[in-house]
Length: 241
Image 1 (tube, rainbow, N blue to C red):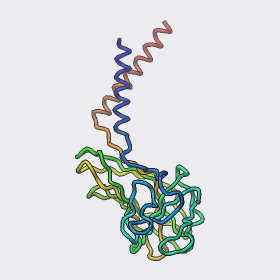
Image 2: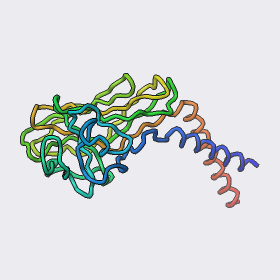
Image 3: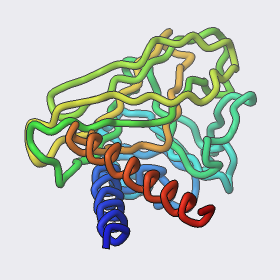
Image 4: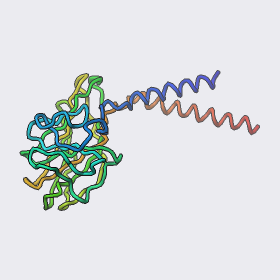
């Protein structure tokens, strides 16, 4: 009977933890979407990006990149006929799958957004993502880059990173905690880079929004794991005896 109660408590605790860790972002790894690499924004190929995401503003030079076409945007962009590439030193995303690249230049940037539903007002949520800095292959010169992450009316920024000419900083993981002001919030990623004209590009993948577990949940988990451990030790002691 005691063993059944312990197992029941452990299952309930595991279920609570799993619920708290549910990713509320649709298509956060960008795997679902247009078949080929392409530019996309609200007027230029607006439906050719990753499903569930919008590239805001008509002039945003945001790119959706498919591993099948490596780092090449093979379809025409609003500025270049026949294709565009990221720097030759660029490496694939952490998962090896699709990702996006966001232009950081002031006159060609625009946020990548998704409306996040199912939130609990006044509850804390962690926005996690993988990102890095690079530039287009047909440009030369050192650049700087950072991402501004928006969640409703609140924003947080990554550190500013410096990228060598035709370089790539490597992928790095960031996680920001936000308070939800309502049941639905607009999640956004805006690339800010310098200098004008090179241009700096921020690459993005692995986006998640998960609820921060309440303190009581952590306490129950500790107690539950302790009970399970105690039961296991007691069973071993009985077998030895």
